[in-house]
Image 1: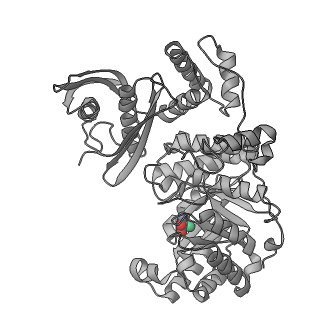
Image 2 (image 1 turned 45 degrees about the vertical axis):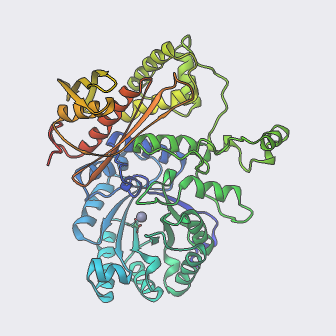
Image 3 (image 1 turned 180 degrees about the vertical axis):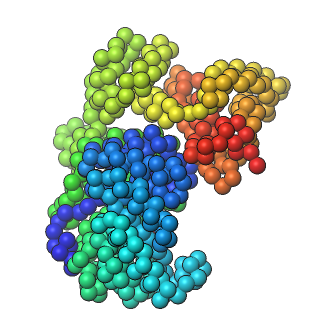
Length: 517
Ligand code: KIV
Ligand code: ZN
């Protein structure tokens, strides 16, 4: 075991902004990435993987800006085993107080044969060459063997030894396709550390995908076997079924310290807010029964459970809602609530808004309170998330009118502002929503494919705000949009526009016609 494996400190490496952002539709704007990075940095994440700098200028800018702003965390940029990638990652993280280059290459026979078309010896040479290059740029270098869990251990051990010899200080063992069981993963980490002669010179790291729902269990098994870095994401977002969820790893280690005597430096009271910020930034709803941060995670419905809770919370609660930052507040909001009360409520709910965002959110809260008798916490959360998620939109809804007749015409008259300039169109459809979406497509002169459209109520009742979700696909790129409004049709239009705006992010293309063809 490494010298690190003899200590009980586990480093948390968050990859929400890299692997998480690779989730279909989870594209974030620069402003959103900075918000996410700020909360990660504040809550005590040790390493933030802020992006893949060679992927686009937007990714480079995000990594470089996070690097400049982070106060505590190491800022990491991802690079393939390609010289230009490594140079670009080095350039982006050089602004950080502490930076890291994370370079990876596939090691499994399946990847070597079908994707890389390389022999094991060629891959070994690449490992030495690329880690050496990265190490010449920065002291902190992480190496990953992609698809490590489907790689024969003898070859993985040779790659690992070569990477450490070339200067890698962290060795990451990804379960790229989420194939491992906890037993497999424990054995792999344990045996690898034992087999690699220089393993004491690096920290071993887990990176588990959730295809079979075992990402967190596998990560924890890796820690028990000697890994001391866990790669994870807020809400478990990531490629396909996602990555190990940060909040679950951290709370499992904290709550079951008796079984797993390891600790992280995460301030767990930030978890709930981090979940909300990421959900809003990535337009990725959190399932109600999601462990730790789901709406129902601390709700007790059955009579027997409620009875037990009233007598003593420990009957059915293994951790307190407060420990993950959920506060029970008594401040009821309505149309007479002023700025101060609204600010206090936002603070209780874990939001700190910039002045202009606060003014906008307060105005929207007042409008809502005028129309709706009871303004619940969920209404305020939805309203603020909406405000944060659409602030940078280039195309905004100005006005809309929809006429619908049973068995007759459904028409939408629409006015939008495209980069500030007004555009007016009128379009028919087979129903109201179809007419609205057709009108938007005419206004932006593009025809993205609608992948998903769904609406739910933020709270109960017919006066509840509608939360609309739209997912669009164009030229292989997917983006999701969200909007919350008292009116379902307006919410639908704004969600569509929000998704379209996200398709434009980082393209630097004109807003109209940018995506056609
Ligand atoms: O899942 C994976 O293998 C990865 C690597 C880039 C570390 O994300
Ligand atoms: Zn991954």
